[in-house]
Image 1 (tube, helix red, strand yellow):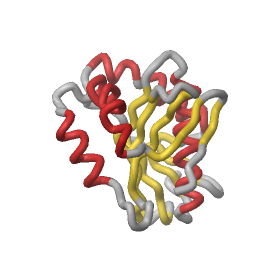
Image 2: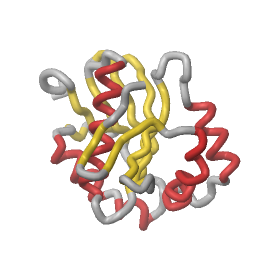
Image 3: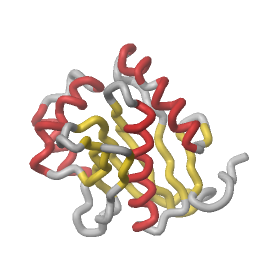
Length: 165
């Protein structure tokens, strides 16, 4: 899969199976009740190795430290057409807008490769009060990037405006 979103010293790349244990630190921040075994099983079950229509993107710095994760899958949407859906987005650290921008660049590249018309990111939440507060900055960054808040999800059309006016 040709994912290589780059922002300053950050890189959006496919999450590799040998990175699962390292990425688990972010999962624990967001979902403290998820075990390492459940995390590993979830990733293996959610990746589509045949078509690249489902997988995970890791946002890493030059030292290979993971600052963000986002799961994605392709599905049709009546209004937006073929759509890349971002789920389980987790961004940590002090540079939320830069990590978010890099993750969105990675999702945009996957969307282009998959022939998608739009990128949707499902609403973030349910990770506990502190997690939800931290993601207020993520939401703000996504809106500044050009996403439109549609209530249950945020929409970024690759061409033209979101038809859900």
